[in-house]
Length: 153
Image 1 (cartoon, rainbow, N blue to C red):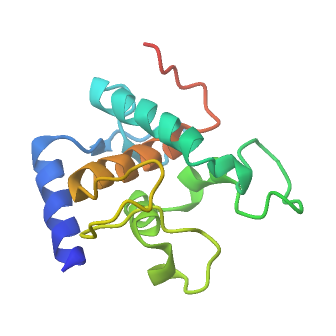
Image 2 (cartoon, helix red, strand yellow):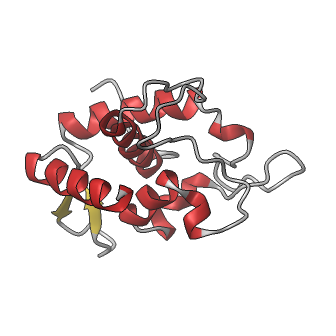
């Protein structure tokens, strides 16, 4: 059920142009780019993602600087590498339900789709559309993390 809702939401958002995924021209190195980061929609989404990244305190577990090693505290992968290593659609699935992709992972599930509870200190009204918007925003922020992306343009 959740999967159908998410697929329908994704298709709806793509149709409305809310997701910043689009075939973009290849960069100078010849790699395909999934995102156009020069749109107002992407900028707004990445800005929200940065706010949520800080609110969820992702950097408490994840490395977020170039070459940052894992330590006793930094136990999760370096998120600067995510844009180079992971497919954007997989990143969404991971954020939606990390346990479904890697049972036993220490990555918490911050989102409670179709549940009527207030367990989440950052997001509490259980609206799946708003939660999905936050998930997309987090992914968009990770796509520019560690770059010279200007959030104020």
